[in-house]
Length: 253
Image 1 (tube, rainbow, N blue to C red):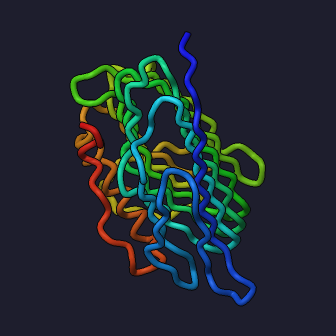
Image 2: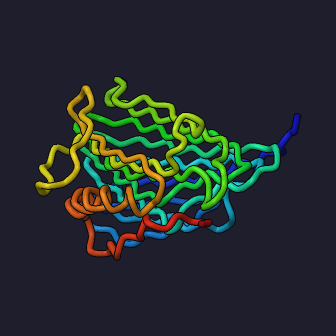
């Protein structure tokens, strides 16, 4: 049995109002440089810029996020994540979010690649307050081109006022021969999208999940990119948005 030395890297991103009423981003730590792209009276757009390769054997990466009541945080990744061959070792990656009453969190994630030989537990947990909104894009890539997938366990737990909204566990073993699992999740957002798009899965709460399982990234992106663009465009809080990165090419091949 291989024993993997661990190193914990925790990144904190917090959005709140000062005593004077100004919107303020507080961030730091972990394997990311946190860049504020824009701030206005309603919220902020923030980018996570990796400062080193991840994930490697022994990594314990955590991103902790807090959005105060009534504010909107758009959290964007600037590059995808690749879990590399760990040669018998393992790693973990976790996102934990706290979204206050009437607040909104937009998780604009790029592809997450489970390369052959990797072994990772990946978890996402978000606690939503009353009338809070969560928009999330997630693309899991099971193996780089021409290789078998790694051993990935991906867990999602989302609650509202302490009650479960989404509880899910996905394992790479159960998704093959599919290679790309692409998802768009909209909780607390009932806006109508343009007609002619894909139909969502309706959760028990009435919230929506769009999902596609395919062999190539461009196949799923062609279907879900327009859905995400429509939701994301309506969630803009500042003029510092820039152009969304393409998901049709996964990092690391």
